[in-house]
Amino acid sequence: MHLWRTPRPATSSARPPARIGGALLAAVLLLVPACSSEGPATSVGSPAEAVLAALPRSTPRALAPYYGQKLAWHGCGVPGFQCATMKAPLDYAKPAEGDVRLAVARKRATGKGKPLGSLLVNPGGPGGSAIGYLQQYAAIGYPAEVRARYDMVAVDPRGVARSEPVTCLDGRKMDAYAQTDTTPDDRAETGALVDAYRKFAEGCGAHSPRLLRHVSTVESARDMDLLRAALGDAKLTYVGASYGTLLGATYAGLFPQRAGRLVLDGAMDPALPARRLNLDQTAGFETAFRSFAKDCVRHRDCPLGKQASEVGPHLKAFFRKLDAHPIPTGDIDGRKLGEALATTGVIAAMYDQGAWEQLRGALASAMKSHDGAGLLALSDSYYEREAGGRYSNLMSANAAVNCLDLPAAFATPDQVRKDLPAFEKASPVFGEGLAWASLGCAYWPVRPTGEPHRIEARGAAPIVVVGTTRDPATPYRWARSLSRQLSSARLLTYESDGHTAYGRGSACIDSAIDAYLLHGTPPPAGKRCSRS
Image 1 (cartoon, one colour):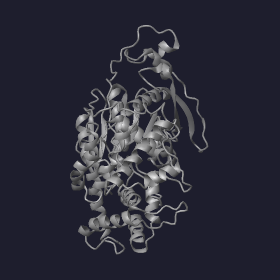
Image 2 (spheres, one colour):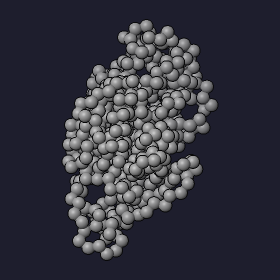
Image 3 (cartoon, rainbow, N blue to C red):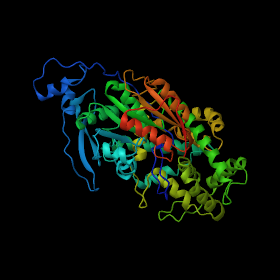
Image 4 (tube, rainbow, N blue to C red):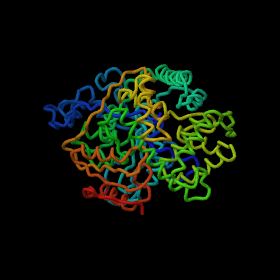
């Protein structure tokens, strides 16, 4: 599966940017009509009616207890952080049918100055833990003045990490799944790949039947509005990266009058169908790989040739060798490095140019010494596999959300074969594997509830959309498209490599976003920045 978030390189100590990308399962949305008529209720008696009085007239009475809930904060084992549990209806159309419990964490504002309320963060995925991102980076790595004025807050979306996680396969079965050949050479290998997709989908249906129909982006965006109310904020302030931009844009479309200062970094385009999203991302990885190739040949340790034009063919040839003869990795579970794991390892390093040195070393060890440990470590970081063989639920949640949000890119292997030339043209190195990876949702046990849809969010305050020109996972064209859809968007462009822009080394980008978050001043139209 492919994610819209950036995997953290296995040995990197750098900030993990927003996660996305992987074996691409496209995530877009179904917009329900925005509730933007803010007229008050006519009578206020019970507490539930008091809550309803502050909501649009179209808000069902059954939602009042959810909007009126108070969070019981408590320590959660990480110094400086508080945690709580929030309830949301499993099915917003039928609130009486039960709840889903969502994990929330926060770190209170730490400095002087007038408090600005809560700043909700999401790192993307879908499937990335927002709480993990908050605790490991955002609450310590965001600019000090932002942390001083805002309570930093995160909620793991429904089905993710601490919020009633969707589960599909155990660790051993996930190992087998991750090693499945995604460039089948014949009918037998095609059948094995289809069987792997079927078993993954069946596992999700067997282990998470209650939740699987209710993990859409729309539902998670509505959950964010419940959290906004529980935090006591009149409007939502939010920084979403990668898939988190889809969550933020969806929120703005649903609740434009409650959208405050929204930063959408590494933007997705909600108007595209799954096939186009996957094809665009395939081209994005090719763009990133060409930048890597140019950088690689500048170094004496580049194992892929002396000229940039040689790098792609040499890597493709290496993948073919691994397809026939996997190499040792020293893994205690006996895993060898085949084409699938090696490709994932290379893709993982495309998200952040800071990982390119690590990738060169891993490739050199694999190609010259037949030691696949370095590429396996990169692949494991992408899948969030721990040393003991345990996986986070990242891939399970990723598939659950993506396959619910959009109809499948392809319905049959024959459709994939027919489209292989387009994918291989988009990326000679990665195209074949990414085309076959787009087949996974064809076997999903739950019908999709979403479809491609433009988001305009008319009436929303200015929204900052950020795009990086050589972003591998969320191509720059998506940021341009989203900024044209949103009626109040300001596009902020980062001329650089890597996935997402905020906190990645550009003082120009960071100062523009900080000014918006702290003072409500969006960047001027057409502002462009470079790494500095």
